[in-house]
Amino acid sequence: MKVTIRPAVPAEKLAHMVPPAYRDAVQAATGGSGTWSLLLFAHSPRDVVPSPPVRKSMRRLKMPAPDGILAVGTVFTEEALALLEEAGARAVAFRKAKWTDESARARQL
Image 1: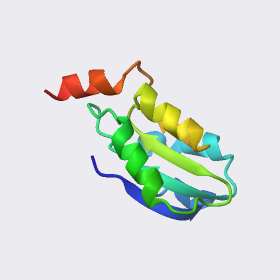
Image 2: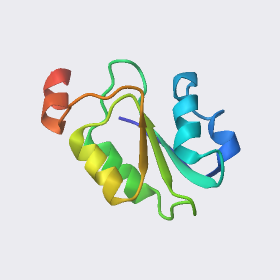
Image 3: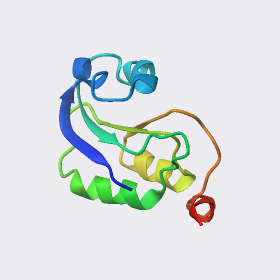
């Protein structure tokens, strides 16, 4: 799964960098101010974001923006959410569901 990383984005530009369905949630998560690092994960309706791409994106993002990290994706597994929480990132998901890395892998088979 590919992730798009934007190391430093002013909050007023975030809405233009995410799919329309996420714009209100991104605005609410950031409060509309500051400079944020954006991790844009898969966002088609069937996508589930597991922990390996989250782990890889956190390694690739060397220095987060001053106001924090914003991770955007359709739905995140519990393990992915734990990694994001550990890094102090805010997850913005299109929907909430109880997925694990194992159940997401089984879905792909």
